[in-house]
Image 1: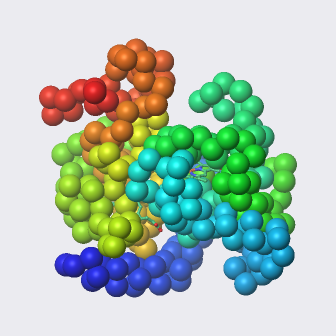
Image 2: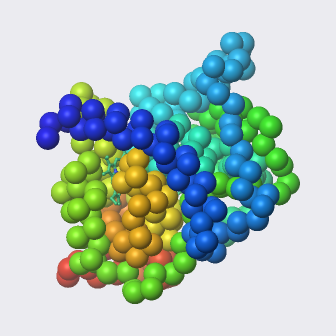
Amino acid sequence: MSVREYTHLLRDVSLLASGIVGAFVMCLACAAEPVANREVTPDALKAFSPPNEASMPMDDFGKAVRMGEQIFNHTKENAGKYVGNSLNCASCHLDAGRRPNSSPLWAAYVSYPAYRSKNGHVNTFAERLQGCFRYSMNGKAPPLGDPVLVSLEAYAYWLAKGAPVGKPIAGRGYPKLPPPALKADYTRGSQVYAQHCALCHGADGQGQSSDGKTVFPPLWGNQSFNWGAGMHELQNAAGFIKANMPLGLGGTLSDQEAWDVALFMDSHERPQDPRFSGSVEATRAKYHDSANSMYGRTVNGHVLGSP
Ligand code: HEC
Ligand code: HEC
C-alpha cells in the first residue's frame, strides 16, 4: 500500500473514530467489567466535553490559543528548536488533545500544580509541559515564559473551559489496566504487532511519512520518544494502546494483547534518557528501578539503553 492509500485509510478510520469510538469509550465505562482499577463512580461517567473549535475567540487571546493548537498538532514546524524527533504532541494525545483516555489537555490543565515523584517536587502546569519536550519529544525544555509554553498553556486553559476544578476528572490520563494475567511476552507481542500495528507503523516500527510530514509516527528508533518518556513505561504504553490503538479501533485489543504489544514496542532501542549518567546500570537503578521499565534489560542479546 502506498502512503497515499494509507492516508485514505487513516481518514476512514478517523471518521470511524469520531463516531463509534466516542460511544465505545463510554461503553467501556459502563460495561460490567470496565477497564479495571479505574474509578467508575456515577460522577465519573459524566464526561467533560471541551468547547468546539468554532467558539475559539478571535481576539489576541484567541491568537495564542490557535498558536498553541498549531504547536500541539505540528510541533516541529512550530516549535522546532525544542523538538528532537518526528513526533507531535498530538501523536500521543489524540484529537488535538481533546480525546478522553488519551491524556487530554483539558483534564491535565485542571490537575496542576501537583507533586510528581518523577522529579520529587510540586510541578506547575508549565513545568509539566517542559517535561514532555525533554522526554516525549526528545528535545529541550522551552524556558518558562517562552511563547511556545505560553501558547500551549493558553490552548489547554481554553480547552478546559467549564471543567470542574478540585476533584478527580473522568477521562484524565490513559486508563490503568490491571496487571496482565500472563507475564507480558515478547513473542506474543510481536504477533500482535504484525497483525494489528505494522500496517501503519511499519514492520520496522519506523512509521510512515509523506512530504516530510509524519503520517504514522515511529514507535521506536532515533525519531521516537526517548528512554526517559512516560510512554516507555509498560503500564502507560499498555493503557494508551488499549484505549487508542489500532487507530479508530481503540478498545478492541484484549488487555493481554495490549500488555504484550507494549512490551514488544518498548523492547526496541530508542534515544538515550537525557539523565543518563554514563552507566546504564546506574541510570536504571536511579530512574528505572521498576518492573514497568525495560531500560537496562537484555532482549535478544542486547542491553536496552546501552550506547
Ligand atoms: C510519545 C508520546 C507522547 C508525546 C509525543 C507527548 N506526550 Fe505528553 N504525555 C505522554 C504520557 C505517556 C504522559 C503520562 C506520563 C506519566 O504519567 O508519567 C503524558 C503526560 C502529559 C501531560 C500531563 C497529563 C496529566 O493529566 O497529568 C501533559 C500536559 C502533556 N503530556 C503534554 C504534552 C505536550 C504539550 C506534548 C508536546 C510538546 C506532549 N505531551 C507530547 C506521552 C506523550
Ligand atoms: C490505522 C493506522 C494505525 C494502526 C493500525 C495503529 N496505529 Fe498507532 N498510531 C497511528 C497514528 C496516526 C498515530 C498518531 C495519532 C495522531 O497523530 O492523531 C498513532 C500513534 C501511536 C502511538 C503514539 C506515538 C508514537 O509514535 O509512539 C503509539 C505508541 C502507537 N500508535 C502504537 C500502536 C500499536 C501498538 C498498534 C497496534 C496495536 C497501533 N499503534 C496501530 C496509526 C495507527
